[in-house]
Length: 103
Image 1 (cartoon, one colour):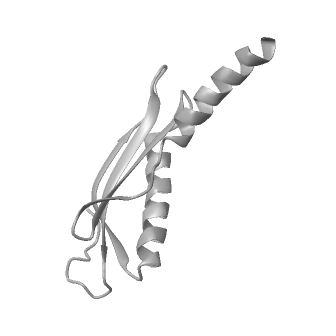
Image 2 (cartoon, helix red, strand yellow; image 1 turned 180 degrees about the vertical axis):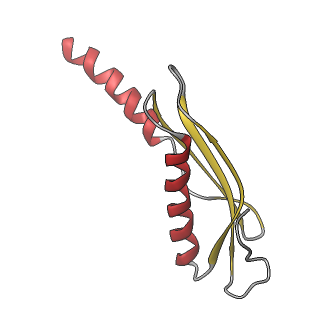
């Protein structure tokens, strides 16, 4: 019974971290959303955002396209709440006029 008290919280924590990112979701033509949730108390929204952009870039490069950001939201962790981040991005062909410098 003692092992169960340790295993259940560990599984819940691992599930919270693992559910933080489910991969890019299409939300329009060449446009995707990518969310993430970090562990509580010791994560930053900016760190999650950087990781999301790395994933988004790899996703776009896998399609032989270029990434351009559309929207970014990042929230740092607080005492009981995990950090959260969400990016919207486009994967556009090289040379597309929609490829602009991020603001």
